[in-house]
Amino acid sequence: MVEIKKRIKFLMGKLLKFFLLGLLVLIIMNLLPAFFYKPEFNSNKMLSSYVKGVYHMHSTFSDGKGNIEEITSAASSLKLDFAILTDHGRPNLGSSTATQWRNGVLLVGATELSLTSGHLVAMGFDNPNYIYPSEPQEAVDDIRDSGGVCIIAHPFDDKIPWTDWSVKGYNGLEVYSSYNEARRTGILKILIFPLKYAINSKYALLDTMRYPEEVDNTWDRLNQSSRYFGIYALDVHGKIKITDKIQLYLPTYRSMFELMTVYVKIQSSLNQNSDKAAREVISSFRRGAFFNVIEAIAPANGFDAYFIDGISGKTIDMGSGCDSPTGKIIIRAPFKFKTNIRILRDGMQFKEIKNNKEKYLEINITEKGVYRIEVTVPGNKFHELPWIMTNPFYIGLPSPPPYHPFNDNPEVLVRRSLLDLGINFKLEKNLNSRGEITLVESEINKKIIRFYYKLSKNTNEKDYWCSMALRQDFDFSQYKGIVLEIKSDRRQRFWTEFRSKGISDNSQEFGYSYSFLATPNWKRISIPFNMFHRVYGVKQDINLKKVVSFFLTINNGNAYIGTEGVLYIKTIGLY
Image (cartoon, rainbow, N blue to C red; front, side):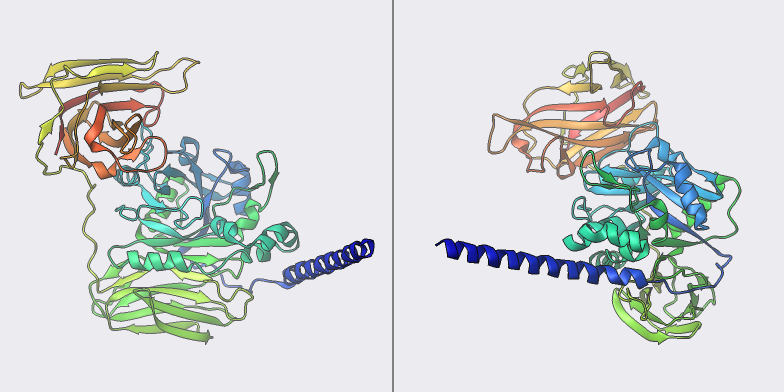
């Protein structure tokens, strides 16, 4: 028995040695290519009609390591023209107001909003005096209304994916997210990433990436019904969080800026006034007049693509379209290395040119469709990755109709009123906030409710709020939703909320809410019950038969401390 145990112990020791040796060989095999990898050489100058920059990064304004001095210094060292800052918030006031020229780089202030359906990046908007809503459609509407551009962030992220594809009016989506790619890489690559990064940061970062098939297919599908640009996103934080107390300060901003870039077409050189320069860059984003590059494979200086209308002879930039279904796609590819050029129409391969050496190509187009271009580098270690990805040309397709917010001026009939001249509504608030519900005469001599509020809190209070509360039992099950006719003394977001008993457990109450925007002009809006979301907890079916209270609320979820104003209400009803 003793001999058997010794034999087993001896064999286990041998197996462990073989395993460790095999693991060491595997690690060495994974590390060796990093010593030899080099990007392809491109000595071309940037075309004067383009500027190069980086998109999606976080700073000390939220959860990033670096401040704007470090970020712009890193961008400047690589001779980048712009960097787009996207710190978390609704909005992040520090990040969204950070636009400036610094270290010779245009820092464009933007923000990344956390919404009920995922994350949305917004740029080019005027900062509101309220907190942007958490509902995706309402957030898009507000941002667009203030001149902004909306981009769905990391739509297929494993942790925070985008879940509501019914939303309309956004401008584009991230078709590559390096942060998302890194999170999906295998365990061995994750474990040896710091070693590989120390040897060759470009190789290490590229080795975490794969072709973005899922999001590209979604992008192509979406472009069949509207126009959306696609963008390469870094989502750089300047650190990797291991635990709450342990963080690795890699990859650095500079190494991430070497990974992926965006080449934006501009009308003229960037203005020395940072706000004007930022508007120029954002205008190009809005039009989709840019292409994306994996810079760690090679710089794409000198590349260009455009469409020449076969009837008018006009030049059509990426992101734009024309009525004519005929013309030519022009591709300028003045590179010393070979490229594979793939042209897609409506998401399917239209033409592929392998091992291309031509510096100028003309591709005849005779059918309408959505055309875009992908370029790969066959001689490169990462030949399967889309080195260059353009935005689409919309050939022979009509422009999409103007977008209108989903609930503006609905033609709905109020079937039941919840407004009894303010008699049943009571004021509810936190200790230090102030409020008052009164009746006033409207311009047509009709009684309306005047809801005054001023938000405040003391040091012992976490939340602050002011509500018009109606606490009684209702059956909403025969109706589609809520209809409101309101105006405010200022642009301000409010919540319409109700609480109901659980479907399977009537001893519990669950809260549901949806926000609405009031302006100084009267407007009538409708909110379907299927748009309401749980205030806390996971999504579940609403028990509309057993509603026990109804509220119109302003609080720390949609307004800043000290906010003061008046909401006027003509109608609160069901339709």
